[in-house]
Image 1 (cartoon, rainbow, N blue to C red):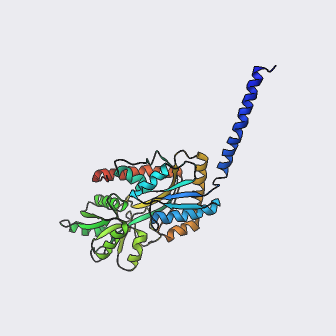
Image 2: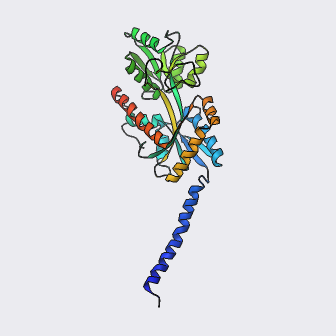
Image 3: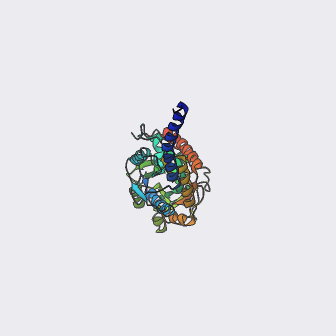
Length: 332
C-alpha cells in the first residue's frame, strides 16, 4: 500500500521534471542571444541622421552577434508611428528601437496625447550618437561672423526682426533657435517648413536669414561660401568643424543645441538580455572604427550606459518641457 506522502513526493517530482527543461531552455536562449535576426526600428526615412546612425550600428552589431540586424524605417508623425510599434513589440530583445530626442523628450510636451509613454513603455539601453546643431546664416543677408555679431545684427533689426527657418514648429531646429532667442534676448521671426532640407534651401537662397542646422548638412555649403557657420551647440567643438567655436566659448555657457540617438527596448524585456545588449552596444560605440563611420555621416560617438541615458532623457524632458510651455506650443 502506497503511503500518501510518497504519492505527493512522486507528483512533485513529475511536476519538477516538466518544469526544469523549460527553465534550462530559457536560460540557454538568454545566454545565446541572439539566435535569430534582430529588428532595429528607426523613426525617420533613409538618409537622415537617425537612419545613418542606425545603419552603422546595425552593421557593427551584426558582426558582433553573427546574426542579421535589419533596419526597419517607419517614418511618420514626428516619430510617433515607430515609437508606438516599438512600445507594442514583443519584449524579447529581438526588436530594438533607435530612439531620438524628438519622440522621447519633445513629443511628450508637444502633444496632448500619445499612443506610447517614453518612460513607462521603454527601458533605456545605451546612447549611441550625438550631432550638434549649428547656427548658420546667409552671408549676404547677415553680416556676422560671431555670435556676438549675430546678436548685434538682430538687435539692430528690432523693428523688422530677422527671419529664421526650421524643419517645423516644435522640432529641434525650432526649439534650439527659440531657446537662443530667449537666452540672448533678441527679436527673431520664425518661418516653419516641412522638413530641414527645404528650410536650409531657403537660407541658401536668401529667402530667410538664418537657422539651426545639422552641421553635416551645412558644412558643404559653408565650404563653398554659400553659408556661414557662426557657432555649434555641442559641449565641445565638432570634429567636423574644429575651427568653429561652441556657444559656450562664444559667451553663452550652458547653452546646448543638438540631437542624440540611443537604443531602447520595450519594457518587460528580460534584464539579462538588456544587459547583454547594453554591453555590446557600448563596446561598439567605443570602437574607433565605429567612430569613424559616425564622423563620415556627420555624427559623433556618444557612449552612455543605461543609467546615464535615463538621466539624459529626464534632463532633456524637463528642459524642452519648460521651453514648450513658455512658448505655448501645442501640436494637436
